[in-house]
Amino acid sequence: MMQGMAVMAFFLLSPLFLSAADTGITIQTSLSSSYPKTKSLSREILAQLKAQEDSDDAALIRRALGQLRDGDVLVLSVHSNPNIFGLGKMRVPWSKFWATFGIARPPRLATVVIAGCMSVEGDDGYKHATQNDIEGLRSIFNAKTLFAPGCEINPLVAAKDTNGLLGSLFAGKKLADINLQNRWYYAADPAIDKSSVTLKDLRGGDDKQIKDCLCKCLEPKGGRFHCRYDLHNRGNSPSCRDLANGPCLCQAAGCFRRKPPVSGECYDNCMKQYR
Image 1: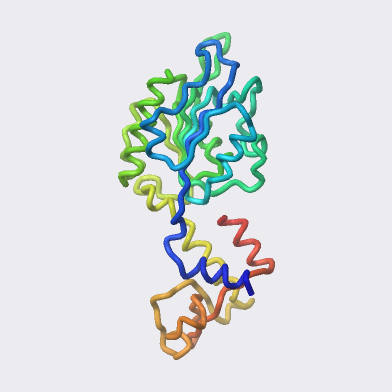
Image 2: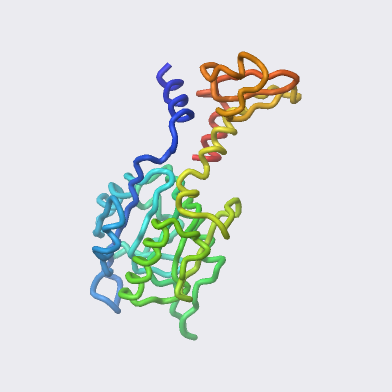
């Protein structure tokens, strides 16, 4: 009963992300020979965010990461390259980011901003990050979009760029129109319209998808009728006109409403796909 009430609340309350905990984290390291410590996120940047941490302690960083919810923004100040970041005395592969901080189920973030270098120094000089490298980081973070420099970047410059980037995001600017100063890459999930999306879109972009997915769980094999999430279409029957019957509108020759499932294989598949 309680689980069913929770699912119905999810369906009937909107927007989904009322309690965003946009978070800024400075991950300190002692590995750098260029700077004595990781440059902390500035007051101007942190003033735009809800939570913060500045540490080399994995437990403290985990606590900050644990405040993130689906649709939030994560800003990182790190010593890094496209393959690793520094945490205390450790070099940690980006692929182990969430596991390093004990986050078993990462949130579906709206965007991640990595204010850290994205070049690898070799015998022939620096090898800079490519668009594919940044796309890979986006996938690791389970983020809808991600911003990161395309090369090594001075901490003061990174801070200034990050502050401007966040200001544009929170002002509702299209992500594709943000001035990246010819220093940053912008990566987006292939399912997202990269050219027109705003942060507001990203906050709740999966909301309709997961609702439709759960309603489709009601469809029988053979396609005798089709179901979707729809609170507006009142259809042509008393059942469709009564929202108390459920938010899922099912149609074939007639029309009726049902409540979404709260358990089962199809429910689990929807949760895995969109949460």
